[in-house]
Picture 1 (cartoon, rainbow, N blue to C red):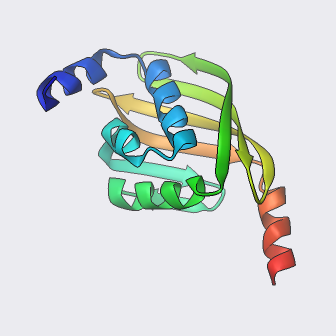
Picture 2 (picture 1 turned 60 degrees about the horizontal axis):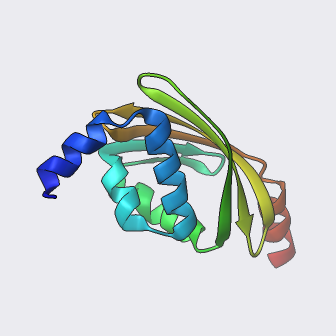
Length: 130
């Protein structure tokens, strides 16, 4: 399958399917698949701040993915152009973090990713390191 065919197939998947593929790729640290699923101008919002553009977003997500041991998807809801996915991120240094991503999808690619999770364990780790 060539790149054009892959884009057509991607555009026909619904946002919930794209959300699952994105989070599963995150759990595997598969930045290649993740990069195929995000728009070049993606905006990523998280408790740690806002990042714009695919290269910067993928770098930040890739750095955090290094701490992730497993991802367990709990629920996925989707509409015509958005999806909400809740999952547990099992990490080495922080334990299990429950997270929810709200994704906006256009033409089969994620344009906005709004991530919410409890930052208590991250703050505790940062406090003990200082």
